[in-house]
Figure 1 (cartoon, rainbow, N blue to C red):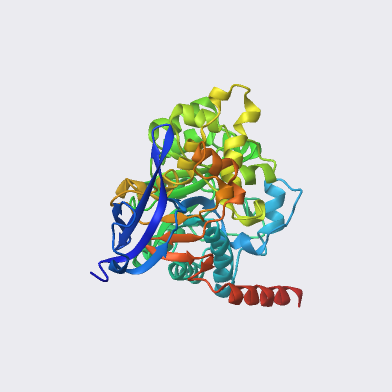
Figure 2: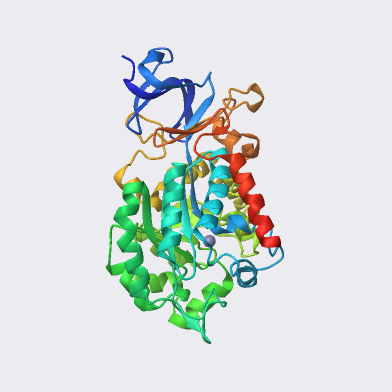
Length: 453
Ligand SMILES: [Zn+2]
């Protein structure tokens, strides 16, 4: 029956996790209402039954990637401050980005989204910073992501701790609105944003950059919204927490009642063994950002220790000014390789399959989507239809040996051909369907001319 399905992905080789290895199953995927509704032997579903067809031609299909930590305004500041550590870097990059007009908020988001979709990202957590946050910026960001169509959790950055008359982490800003004002701005717009398809979240900048009152309000109120924060990114961050709280950042968040599956902590480079135990025991999620951590000389997060303790981990690029791309495959490869510098025992190195799970299913722990949709980040009957399809390229050898190792280590060579999020095709045959890339280039050129004038 024509129109029985919204979309049919015909004849894909579907990557399905199967214990320690992967199973590849040749199948037709029928999609309706944003979900995979049938996974059937190739050729068994009539092609005319779908309103839209993607002929995968035996190309590998895998779940869409989740970029679980970025800051979209930094797409306008790539390559800045190339030999600076975090605090100096922030001073060099952020003053020009903190009060963007709506058209530049949209431009920055579209630049990042175009790059992410090209690399197979179907969900993003944008720890969105403007200081102070405004309704106009928030609205522009929600509308931009809604038009692009990828899943987005927009974690609005909150901060109110001052030192010597300026905000910590934003020394060019003298004062911030009160904690209550910042929190109510997010809460007031959250159901409107959800109607547009964007989830708002609270994004405290870091425990030591927020008052205890702000963190306590976030812990107490609007429990349906996720919480996203930076945590002990640099050794200086960890020291600042000890100076201010007399304990670690993790212990302080524990005391305030914020640890738990609702909270995701980006970086967590300088945490102790007992911090790791608490993160695991409470189900708190860590977002590992190895490229950014190397770019800013912040250190190497203890990924093997997180995994051994059972901490939920996701992967992030971080913003484009500390990366300087939004390419998740570089993150995936480094997440797999960096632990090998720490121990010569191969048994302690994370498996490629584990790393891919962090980049897919793991990311949905950060968005909160995993709780409502346990199948999110997999290709299965009933799962949300977020997936990417590669070419059937014999050079890629994607089904030789370990397909996961092939994807993880050969990652930069693999560019998907089609990208589908929420059952909607965002890239078909390497053409983006919701972003006008030529127009984007023109707008970027105009912005550069504005800056130069
Ligand atoms: Zn960050």
